[in-house]
Image (cartoon, rainbow, N blue to C red; front, side):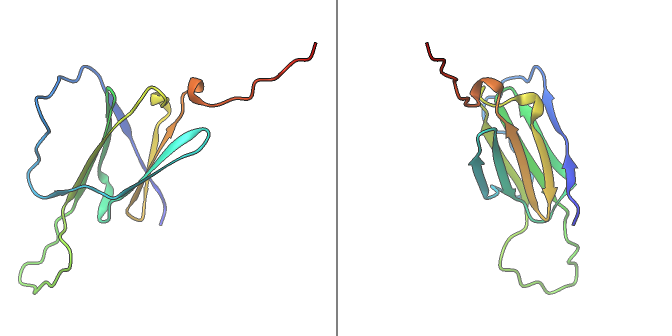
Length: 133
């Protein structure tokens, strides 16, 4: 399956919220793996059933917000035996100044959202040459 590109938007002047946002319907916290390389931090979120058109990844100040909506299954008149519940996804993360906010990218493939958070130049380790003499 080809990867779909997901647009990350940065919102300016977001008013402070007095609590957590609420959404209608069932929302689940997706399982997330996070790993770090020398140049970037990578976040992998399991979001089965979510298509790129129903996925929002926003950066508000220092908060990375992921919201994925699953299309409803039309099961009218069908007998359904399910071992799990289907619902939408919500997860948020605090981002430090280690991340280069302008270079964040995201892609969705086979129900896995991959967000690449490149490190800012000041956060990437470098070797300091030593001169003799």
